[in-house]
Length: 183
Image (cartoon, rainbow, N blue to C red):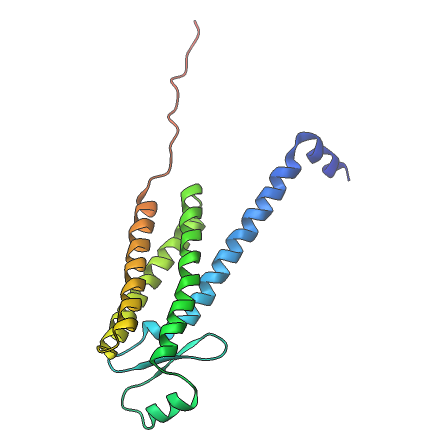
């Protein structure tokens, strides 16, 4: 009780509250990263000729090239090129908003945990671009899907450049003043 009264009189209550909000914000951003890395894991592992599909929970999976009855399974699960376009559009629109949020957070804080998250997202973007290039080669005749994939890749490149700039920024260092000695 006395501690609460003392922190209240010193004005520390609002600072403690802000620290809790920052901690919760960091936890939310890290949890979202974990969800996206799980969601996009199969995109990162695509091989030439693999087809991409998404289940009802939003997680992607692959139809590996050379498997039996791929067309029948894709038809049965209502997966096709049009659905791939829709799923990529939906998921990467929300992912890009998340990336913008992380960039904004990196602009206002020098916390090493955010910087580590930025490095992890940069690695995820590299893996996603590799998988998306592979997916693009799987559908060479689908102009609409190729344009969507190119758009996503360009957005990921912009993010990588921006986060690279933010991560190479040095921490602000205050210069020490020369101490004046009195005689």
